[in-house]
Image (tube, rainbow, N blue to C red):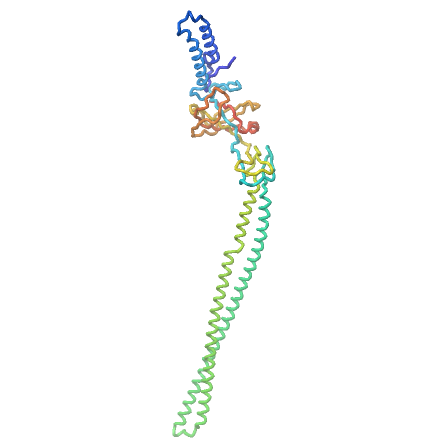
Length: 423
């Protein structure tokens, strides 16, 4: 017997007359009337069988399609497998998927696959290599060469630092030496200054002797020869003083110039040392190594997280494109995303128990409603019932599958299931 089709929210009542029976009854009545003698019937009775058959077919199709739910959602209260859900439950189509989603990993286009290191079903950990590309060998060689260049550049930089420090130390020694020379010149200048006292003493002697000689009573006590001798001594002392003063002054000025020059050299050496420390010559090589390391990392497809390999779409030797090479997911938690008719979503609440079943599953799995989306959109999952509507608007309802049913659900990722949400 053909099963009856009732509303989405089961009421326990079946339709008064199954659609198939309506079609058969209409065909029998039409056939009976058609077999009557045309001559004994008026024109409207002769065409009546054809009209009855056509109306019966239209009526049966209309009832078969629009009797599926109160709003014509296409969700039957009976599952395709014939198992009737609890009375008042909301039936919808859903899809099993990992709670954290599916990771679709691809590579830069144009490279070539060298080795695939995983297979479907492999459990991988984070940062584990999945696919190795041919560019990995080239990038590895370039990275080794860049690192050798970096070592040489660092060695040269260290030598330059030592030379800069040596220049600073030399400048400091030169400065201390010139400062010592300046102090010595200043001391000599002070000693020369003391010689002026001798000149003043000689002048006083000459003046005293001339005073005595000009005195009539003491004129014979001092002779002119003595005075001339002292004057000659003063002239020689004056000449020596002038030469010493000039030499000491020049030495002092020279020492001051040397000190200033040494200070300038020391400042330049320190500035060169600071510039060298602030701008090492090997920095561009470090940036180049970082770039090569990034390219080398891209030459090996690594697992971004722990999970299970779902699909492997790569073979050694083929070129990479924009399509994913590896699909993986964390199957420790599974979710069913059900597309509930917009007229029924108001009856759904967080925490409601849901049951999911499919011919591909050995048994039904259970879960609880964990999220109800806000966006209303067109349904993307077609019901396996060929008479169900597919042009209705729906809202995604997320159902967290119970932990004991996760192993079974994870065996059929992206499986379409029939969802029954209990009231």
